[in-house]
Amino acid sequence: MFEGPVQRLIDEMARLPGIGQKTAQRLAFHLLSVEEADARRLAAAIGDMRDQVSVCERCFNVASGDLCGICRDTRRDQSILCVVERPQDIVVVERSQEFRGLYHVLGGSLSPINGIGPGQLRIGELTDRIGREEIAEIIVATNPTIEGDATAMYLARELKPLGVRVTRLASGLPVGGDLDYADELTLGRALAGRMEL
Image (cartoon, rainbow, N blue to C red; front, side, top):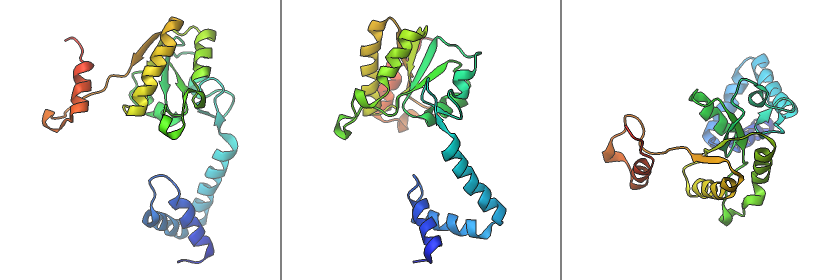
């Protein structure tokens, strides 16, 4: 539809998650209209990210060295691991400012229908960490989906015999939510995860 480089940029941007063809066109034409230095700074940031970002060899978070900033932080509680599916899940947990332990990124969740079993996830590395480090508790923070729940149950079954406490994030009604709008699954989880007042 458009000339060579413009269409190529639109096509590449449209491959990004959450970016459709129209948004990709808007972004491409925006980049054409900004100062050249701004566009080059964006291109350099993408290049630098690809060249300089690696995977933390301890927890599998994104890192700019052997270890990520969280694993290097000696002030964090070394006895608690929060297990998440993806590195971006760490950002969400950190935003709560309630967790001061360490993390372990599985790299996804169990999904037999998609061919993802325990061998495709970093579960072996997790059990190795439990044996190597003095881990007292594993908080399973997988997504509240069928796959996330299956992963949580699998982890609990595999990790409890290692003498570590395995807990799961509570899920249920959002603060300020109305019971009329809660679906049965959410309400059921809220009831199951209830706390004593």
